[in-house]
Image (tube, one colour):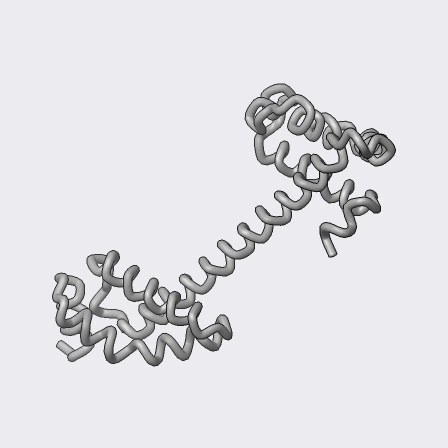
Length: 181
């Protein structure tokens, strides 16, 4: 049996020395790879750390017949992709908060009656489904699951209608521009 196969077999069996040796021998290579992917030293270190954690947690799945180096690179690459997905979700969530905050600022402010009327006019210009979903969500404080039941559609479709409504409001309301600059 080759040295790499024996090494992989030892790691699969939970040999901590094999794990430590693998860490020492592959850390710099993985760090360089992660750094090329993300162009951020701290993030690259985090990705490599997550790679080794995932390797240890899934050690029983290691196939000694396959290259452990390639396996580590694949885990590292997947960790980078997971980071991108997480970042995209976080940015979408923050964008949604900005929109909701702006919406609430201009629809519920007593001193801004003309702006409130403008918002209401824009809401009335939305497609019927988008308008219904938005009104149920923001004016009647219904949860997405309740809205889905009332409208006879899926929760995902409710999310899409509300997202589309916010997008249209953002495009058409001059008052919201300062928040998105």
